[in-house]
Length: 364
Figure 1 (cartoon, helix red, strand yellow):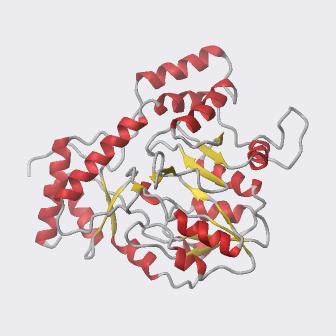
Figure 2 (cartoon, one colour):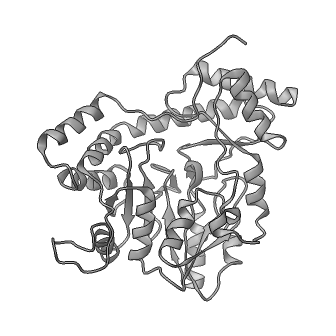
Figure 3 (cartoon, one colour):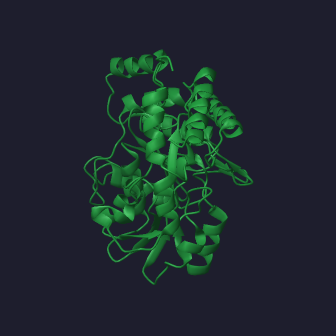
C-alpha cells in the first residue's frame, strides 16, 4: 500500500488551555500543593458523580500505596489482585509489606473473576482489589458479596476507568478507596498524577497524612509519611482536562463501536449488561499469532498496537509463583489493543479495519 502516516496506539492531548493554566500557576508563584490541588480534588469528585472526597497524589501507584496504608494493610496481610494488569497493582501491595495473591480473570471483561478470588481467600486475606481493566468495570456486585461473606475489604484500581460505571454507579464509588491514574496516556491527564476517591473521613484523613510526610499541619507529624503530593502545576492541567474528558470518552466509544461493527477474524470486546465502558484501550483477542499480526499491522499498514500485558504479574521476577491461572495466560497470549483514542480519524478507523481484516484473512 502507499505510505501513510503512522497511527499511534495512544496519543496524549494537550492544548493551549492546558498551557495557559500552567502559565497562570507559574505566574502566581504557588507551585507546590496549593489551591489548584484543592480545586481539582473537589471538581474531580463532582464531575464524575462520586459523592465522596478525593485526594490528589503524584502518581497512580502512589494513590494505591497510600490508600492501602490508610486502610491498614501491612505485613502479614494478603490482598487478592489480578495478575493480568500492570505491575503497579501488585507493587503497591508489596510496598506495604503485605502479600499480593493472584486470582484469575473473566475472559470477556479481562477483569478479576469473583469465583477465582473466593478460591484464594485465606485467614490472612485483608481485601480484594479488582482492576477495571481497559476501562471496563469489574464485577463489583460479586466482590461486594464476597466482602460481606468473608469480612474483607474491597478496594478499586480504577487507573484506566475515568467515567466508567456499572448499573448507574460510577467506578470509584464502590470500594473503601479507589485510585484513578492521570498518566499522560490515560483518558485524561494531569501530566503525571493520581486521584484517590475515599469512602470515609478517617481513611481520607490518613491518606492526606501519608501523602505529605505524615502532616496535616506543618511540623506536626502524626505518622511516618511519604512525599506523594501533587503540584499545583499538574492540578491546573487536570482541571482543564476535566472540561474535555466527556467529549473524548464519547469519541472513544464511537470509535469502539465502529471497530466492533466491522472487524472480522478477531474476538472484539463485549460489554457487560449495565456497564459503561470508557475504552482506555480497545482490546481484541487474536487466537492465532497475535505477535505476527501486530508486526504486520505496523510494517504493512503503519498501524500501531499495544500488548497489555504479555507477561502476567505472577510470572514476573518479584512475584513469581506457580499459580494456575489459565484464563490469564490465554489473555496474555491473545490480547492486542488497537488505536481507539480521540485523535483517530474516520479514515484511520477504516485503515485499521482494512488492515486487520486483510491480514487475518491472509493468515498473518
